Image (cartoon, rainbow over all chains, first blue to last red; front, side, top):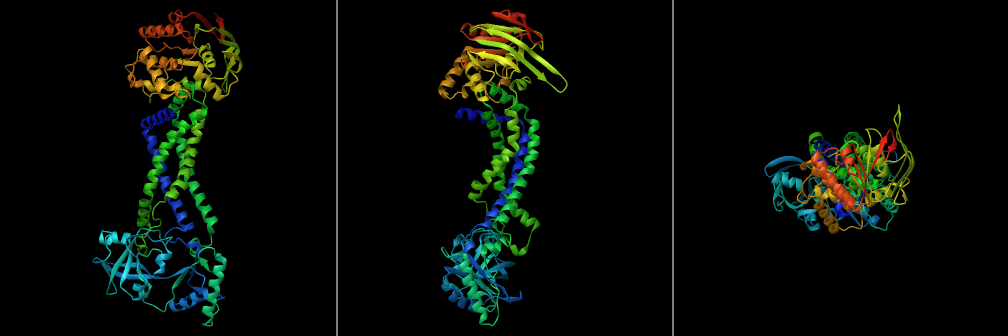
Length: 405
Length: 222
């Protein structure tokens, strides 16, 4: 059995060598297709799951800006009001407070506007940013307004050309801030602070009376509807102190905010359909080319069938050759996805506020094993299945009349 | 050993209907070296393809070793070809990607009861028999026509078939090579293997025990 498959592989490699143009077309077609497929699959996974750093996205309620019952904007809650609000909610597991903005910063003699976030210590506990150097700031450092910041890996690499930057300084508004930690790449879609590249303790937020965004995390087994009702009541109480009526019917989780009104199934279905279309078009192209070039393979298959191979075994032998090409193409696609997405982002969507943040942080093993491998096999059957079937069932005597030495 | 009854093969194209075999009847006894002769298009290769289960007849029956083979399913015919039949073709039909040894071992790969070691031993034995044990790692493109045909004979022999079907095995060879190949086939027949061979060449056919002549899809003389 092992020897038979070793022979099949030998034959497949020989055919690939003899048909370099076709092999190149097939591999590059598959690679380009899979760059988009991997990107879409990873993007969907990032958006639809509790993808790091927002590992509690579906159980974290966002308290931000509100409207009254007439739809008029009535703003959000200040830091002090949030403290009172949390006393009313009680059953939450943890919370983080966030504010975002931009700062002019001088880093390693280079000046630029950066997208930044002001957060509390619990922010780092609730969200799973991976620290590749240093640590998050502590509650004491936060309360004492110690000049410390966390930065992204990309920022460290761009401005210091090193990841060993803990202890070095950046200058903001004339003050030096010590770098306490460096976090690894993340997708700005799944980051609660979006594309922020620098995080300050919230106590440095310059407009302390401005509203903060509050993320309240409820762990299992609290039902999320019940949690929303609790938060809604607390928000109503908070606004009632200002004699303002507030509409709390649209309270949502981090994940619900991320995917908007569309919902999991609609978004998943949409991306799924797009992926199938992406697979179908190149599959038809390769299929057309393949149908025209199967003569050599037909002869070998006829010889093998003459000497005892069945149609099914021949079918899988033919698919093996395509599998080698598709695997090579898909592997290139997987490896090239992150650089390709970054390049497209930089070239066509160069938004300064995004800084070095990326749409996807990488490609997960789960996506490769659970999505890409099955899609690769589907793609294989889409363009290779029909030619393999047609070749394997051809009349042996008819094929061998052609001759092959 | 081979009983052919009313065997008919009709080829249809859009415009014409061609009767390649017209109610052919033939019996081949065990151990016979039979040659089938006739002009081009008379149906001799078609008949050989039917006996070799490489094509389906339009009508009639073929019984080999008491087994009705015309009604077999694909998996059964594949197994039958592998166990009972050996094939030699005019244009050799070696697989170009595989070396001599791999080409010869091919039929045994489809047998589950032969170990790799046994497979290798038998391949070396048959290659020794056809005088090619010094060309094991050569590829078909590196061999002469006569050598290719000897590899093809070794491949046909490795499964120890009861019947060898040879379709013009000397058709692509010069007279010296043809004589060598025929000598080998006569020797194989002498060891008890039944051989059915298609040929155009009277001299070649003259070396076999029985000659069947075909004309326009029927057997005209035995």
